[in-house]
Structure formats: C-alpha cells, structure tokens
Length: 172
Image (tube, rainbow, N blue to C red; front, side, top):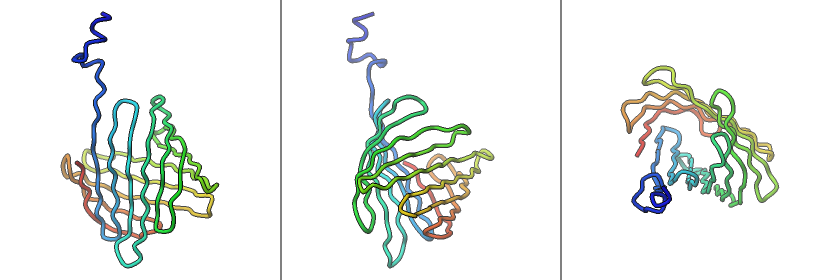
C-alpha cells in the first residue's frame, strides 16, 4: 500500500491542472474569464468592459485556495480604467447554491457580493448577481441564457452599469 502511494503513475496521487474559459460578447459589453485549477488551487482572470468611446473596464487576477466545499480564500489584484488595487477575501457557498463573496481592498474599501443561477429547463437558465461596494457603489446584473450546445449559448443580459443587451457566450 505504501509503495502505491509513492508510485508517480498512480492516478490517485496525481493532481493535474485543468484550464477553461468563457467569453460573452453582447451588444452593450463583453465579459469573460480564464481559469487554471487543480484540486485545491485556482488562478482566475476575469474581465468586463463596455463597447464604445468611454472604454470603461474592470479586470481581476486572483489566486484562490479551496478550504472545503463551502469556503475558499483568495488574494490578487483588480485593475479598472482609474486605478489598480490589491484584494483579499473569501468566497462562501450559501443555501440555495448562492455564491457569496466578501472582499477587502488595499485602499480600505470593502465588497459584498451574492450571485447564482437556476436551471429552468434543459436549455434555459436564469442568472443574476448583486454587489455592494463601500465606496457608495452598487452593481447588479441579471439575465437569461439559452444553451445551444456544449460550447455556445445565447444570452440576454441587463447590467446596472452597461445597460441591456443580447449576445453569444462561447465556452472553451
């Protein structure tokens, strides 16, 4: 038994890394994420940006550590069209499979966020998120997603900052 644990070819010992991503191109904005993860560690890049002349954007690069099925802790950096800040926080899974996020920033601000989705049929799901930032900033978005296949979905989205739009989500 002890020899099996030391064997590098034993699939129970290996902890391979996986990578995946998602990009949503809508009429009013685009957003996406790139993720690389193993069993306990995750590196995640997320962004959202407005189309047009204002070029408003927000990007986040985060390392996350899985503690248990309900709790993960993370740290990283967030960049927007105005500045770059450091962030640290934790994610906690609430009842009804709602994901909560609690974050502190290097500039002394805090963020609380709740998000979730609900599969209504085999192809149709509804999603939404709401967040409160202590810098007097509230943000929310909600929408419907129709899954066309494993890699594509049609999406209708209403965002508090970027407005309403329709578009396509590509998963890879």
